[in-house]
Amino acid sequence: MSRFLDRIAAASIGGLGILLLGGCELGPKQATQTGYRGTGLEQIVDVKHIAKVSLIPPAPYPLPPDGGPTAGESYQNIKVLNGVSKERFDHLMAEISQWVAPPEQGCNYCHNPENLASDEKYTKVVARRMIQMTQNINSRWSSHVKETGVTCYTCHRGNAVPVNKWALAQGTPNPGSILGNRHGQNAPEANVGYASLPSDPFAAYLNENQQIRVAGNSPFPSRDHVASIKDAETTYGMMMHVSTALGVNCTFCHNSQSFRAWNLSRAQRATAYYGIRMVRDTNENYIGSLQTVFPAYRKGPHGDPYKVNCTTCHQGISKPLSGVSMIAQAPALKGVSKPTAPAEGGPAAATNVPAAFNDPQAMTGTK
Image (cartoon, rainbow, N blue to C red; front, top):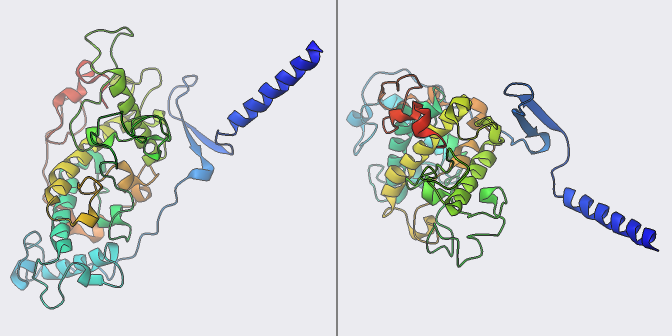
């Protein structure tokens, strides 16, 4: 009898194990070695879940040569692109209509067809600021976007409002709180890789300048630890978001021997470091400045404008649009180059990134 019961128990445990494993993602995987053999530094890709690249629309017509009268000389109320030639200005307007405006509205999505110079439609005011934002990203944040650059299409993909966006979550009176609402904690959320973690790491790190660093030099509590366990959960949630947004695992940026050590990390970690600051700059200084411009139906449940995160551009791929650059067809979006002196011993830094980035002691554990 005891043997019979033992067999039933073993079978039950085995069946439970199969059920638990059912939650794992089965199927073929692609693994690429990214570090020394035996260190487990491999990039693993689930073939079934590779994000598909959206089709890049062709230019509405060939880019005209530069020169001739400027847009500022030819049209009224041109505040951002007034120095661009009229021919190239018209070409960019046709592209923006293709990239952003609903097909049934076209130019009328932003303009009053009876008075194109009018700013009466909020969409035109927003579009003007978004052009400035795009120019800022391309000229100031080459440390993240490199020479590929971004255009309106990088985020919008033919939609008036980007599909991937965020605002303060419904029922979250304090974005840093883990109490008092179902979605604040212990409820699997897509934003954090379906982990039971604080589900809004964006407000702290992509709209505010809160400390992301959590690792210390000692495994024991000490002054070296700069964040609590609660804050570490939010950091982990943010890393889950980055991983999902880019369709990669942790070792795409980090060395598993020491996640906190910069001198062991891959170059992609530096790119991500600048990217987080680029997104923060975009949300604070460009989208945030439109708080009073957006109508209520274009805001989140707490009345804040919808903002961007890593998924807005990447959409499950490590390089947006698989690294295809569209900037050559929209040269006005490059903006005015703002060269910055390279940090000593390291990559060129954006103007608001400290030189301490290259100091492993100062920056250890910081994303």
